[in-house]
Length: 477
Ligand code: 5AD
Image 1 (cartoon, rainbow, N blue to C red):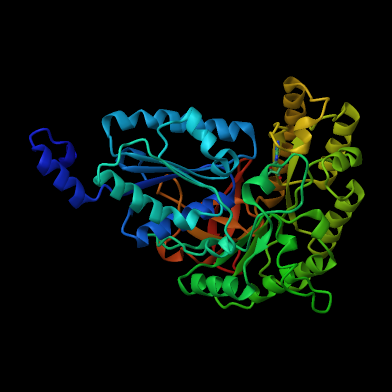
Image 2: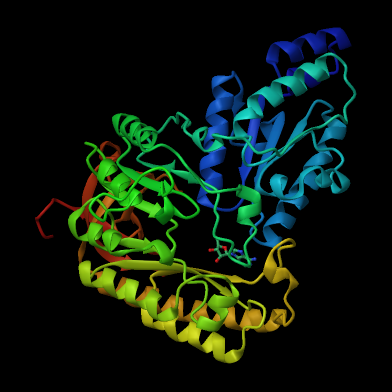
């Protein structure tokens, strides 16, 4: 059916009235990049819905499109710019259509985005997500008052306390079992390859009691698994709280979340090897809800390159942390971030990365080809590594990863794994959930089991997914 607003038989006045009645308020949010961005988008969606906007899941149905962007690599920025360029064409047909760019690329490029994308209505940085509803209200009011299209709102300022504004969760129709909770914004580490300190600003932590309250509310709504999110979670609260009996503020926070009834699993991302101290290792020994899955970014296995990256740890220290964690939890799963082709990375440096990568026996890894980010120290370095060489090194690590993953999955065949049932799988015919080691599983189940911890006998595995059938707890099939 035609959208009534576009019905040619309506007079202009009636059409304008209908538009006002319908409010032209359907918002589609597209998210690029990390889990932090996913979480920010979710909070923006919740704030917009509270303001009377409708969140739609099909972009063809929207009046307002918001792209929440990523700047960590050039490819991510180019993807969002390409998308915005395509969408801008829609304005010709739909003059009231609103297009906004939010998040890291908005922060990184600011009003300069208008040079490439003059049709943008809204550019909102990472400390101003909570302003999005006001800005959309203003844009719509301006349109109605006849302010010419072409006047854009740009806000990429800093704002004290903005870390406390990412706290709303979108109410969804299906039960939400697993939730991300933002504990901190920004980063002060100054890794020489990284644009994040520029896009996300100074490191700021949310108050512990706010985070705990949010987790309690989520638990009351049926959430069973919490992932604590921050750029450098191991530094959580270091300026605001003291260590007690050698326990860091981050581990104190984990303890508090651990004490919440209904929360069955706790994860976090991302820690920094520098802050991964003994108290956190020991937490895995005494806090059973802390899942045995650690994402620990290595970046490089060469001490020379780590130094050039301004990553203050050595390959030896990194390995020590991995071994300490395996000593506490022998079944620990590991994942990591690696950058191949950092400026000046020689074949010998890469060989050290390959060797440490193999030794750590990762179950999962994100391997990135170094991407020049203007404004970072590494962007100015000579000795950039040719693209083909980055690609070759990337493939070497991916091959190792695939073999590791297959090896791990083979050990899981015929074992019984604890799975948290999340909901229907993509086909809608079966169910999906994850193991404590973060492996995705697919199985037949009853809808009443969503949100429950079940026992799954693993019968088949692909590289990334386990397939099996449910068994009654403690009863072998
Ligand atoms: N080039 C490639 N990868 C990068 N990362 C951060 N900056 C860059 C860059 N300039 C990777 C790091 C980080 C992850 C989120 O992105 O591995 O941990």
